[in-house]
Length: 192
Image (cartoon, rainbow, N blue to C red; front, top):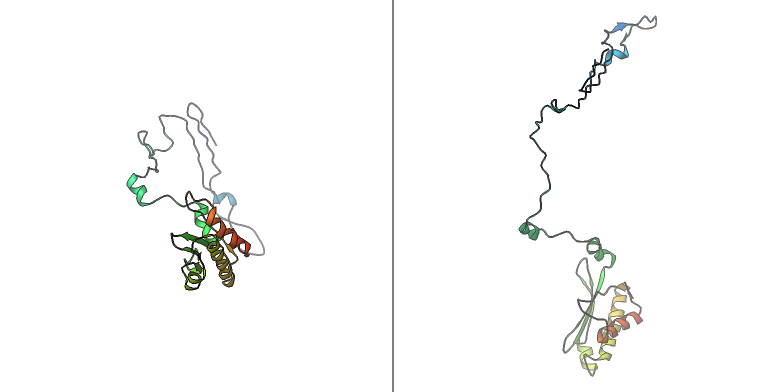
């Protein structure tokens, strides 16, 4: 076994030459037995630090690795918008029932909707025949209390005991909206 040294660092390793298979003198059986050294071939390893002899001869010095990442163009980004956040993706499962309250100039409408299927669970409005004829005003505070009580009763009949309310942009929970939400809470519905 011999190793060379110099400006080029080389590491040599060799094992003994392969041995031919031999028969073992065994009185019980006549099986062939191979030496464990014969299964390893002669091995020579070398590592160099020289700039003249590159370690990978298939790659030239002029080659370079190009980056795989490229920025998306504006048109491509507009076609494929960014991914939704975790809350946006899971909110409809965590809070499946959504309360929607709408105030027009003449009526008050409220409904509970299942977010996953977009099915309406219950509705209460002052435009209904029974309320339209019985209430003196269809948009005052008493009408808000009646609509809140009806929504709470009808949602409990549909086995919905917790609803979510998401205020719109620049919407404050006060006045008639606050009265509707407070009445729903007082009648046993939990807001999540």
